[in-house]
Image (cartoon, rainbow, N blue to C red; front, top):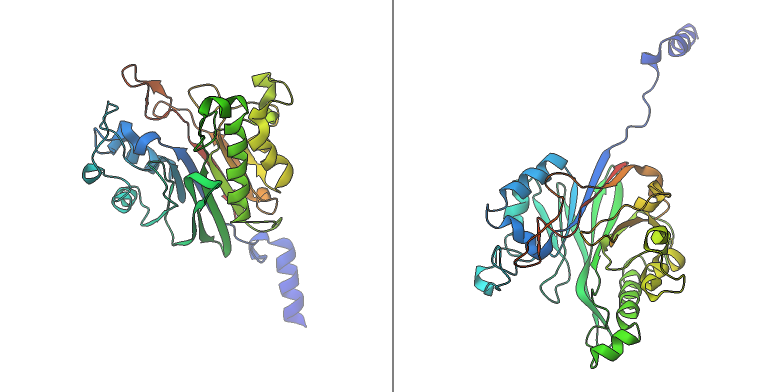
Length: 312
């Protein structure tokens, strides 16, 4: 009894003697559409790119447009045998400290790649289904475990054009808002084949959605019934997912492309959102886009990266 009383007294008066609080683990996610397999980084063998990524120290990276397409400074397409990416992503990712790589579904020149400091478990490569549910640039679903929590990472990149994918008459499809309808279909298909109807759990869905949100319409000034909102309306109204950037900055419009749009989003389930400590779209001396007048591509990309920090 005397020992128990003494221990209770020590715990009451000496904070250092109290049992420690639950330890939390920081986790940093980096998403970026790197434009044509980091076209701008080929000239220095990606040295500046690697240095920038290392400085951010992400635990997981999700890259859109992760395949080499053109020679540096040109629109001249490389032959397949000369393309460095996607084949050499393990080599490139190792340079910034990520030994684990997952390549999502590949339908064309614009796949997504996920890299990680810790083991990744590939769950699905999503390419859609014939005849009318093809996912234009593919999508991917991988898992990583952090502090005992399994995080589900879903990457995507929707169709970019105003007409539908595969439209027989692009002009007529554009007039009928075919591209906006197609983007919504792609999101429905990807969500159905990943989190489905789940409202709980640890899910992150991120990508270049090529669509704008009505939550940013204070900037765009479009009619409320504009078809450009269809894809993001699906995310807002028919999934449980939260738009992290908008949730953190509800009164601001933080653009993510050189063309004054926000196309790049990271969504999460409500269970995961309380763990978010910081989120931002990164514009700095390296990432700030500069248009190449000869090609209309950008250095280093026409999109800005999104960084999200968690404590798990």
